[in-house]
Image (tube, rainbow, N blue to C red):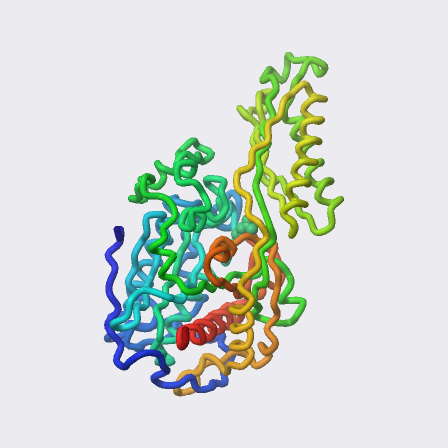
Length: 479
Ligand code: GLV
Ligand code: MN
Ligand code: MN
């Protein structure tokens, strides 16, 4: 099944869980980890070999390796669509980095990558999984997704340098098409993995150019006939922890570099299709028009007004496509996508009903028709309380990051880890329905995300990787 050449991690000396060299307390800030170097253990990229030789890769250094992939000069930032050449390049990078660390990499039938740090002689069960995604929104920033993957690689380095002997396996997971930017369904990979999306429906999804998911999968060497819930893959995981750049201002306002997640806001995507009469912009009198773009303009305002009227609601039109789309052409149809979110899923449903009614009125006033379809709907999800509490205690109590010779430690100020709800969707939110799941957030000083301006300070990204290492250490040493 594996489409990549995986390698098997050399067996570590020693028995089940423990710390070989101990996690001594260091004095640094956690921001200065140098890029790794080649070592006798065969690590040619940044990082630490399975035998614990080398220097932990810095998150900054890992992200820098991705800096040229998917640069979007027109939009700014990065465009790395699901199952595109760009995402494939990033997945290949991940396979290289994981393999260089002696992790055994496999790709499952839904295109999810798994890089395993196995317990010598043990089976792949009750694993601790961590990871995120490498695709982006159109014109996105460099942290949303890649930060979680790079931090997971760096965290493995830290655990190896600390001499950790895990009592249970660890998997770094990379989900494809998390943003749903290409095929319209958010968290496509984790939905397929968990069976939350019908495989036949998924295979027929089309991107903006008309390419089906089945065709895009084939370009990536995957067969759409094998899509769907993967019970065997899921049964291997005992818990999942996703680290992510914060997409809001919760941490900056609390003066903390790292926080934990409490919940993901319910969110969904709907498409409105307005149909009118395509015609000539110069010869059609203003009173003779049935212009679906005028109707759609009414709907854009209705979306904003409906959400403004409901406390805590957010609703956005970020994408609108007139067809055929010519300056001197009255459109014959307009497709418009709505992203709507609210903690109460019934309130979201009522919000969509009210938007639909307003869109229908706008269409009627313009002699057009309108049709509403749901593309993906995700309920509000709470992360696992026990797991989150356990990680909160572990992160508060830890001295962290200690190399035997006193390497960087987390800033002492991290005590009292904030726990935040998020308005952004995540694969962790999908997995939470099946597996105890938690999230770690890394401070974003402006709160801006899904934009080239998305940012996290270098030292905070290193603190995040150390916090993830501490969280994983807590979980890997005991069931
Ligand atoms: C993904 O980041 C989303 O919230 O849509
Ligand atoms: Mn995102
Ligand atoms: Mn993300």
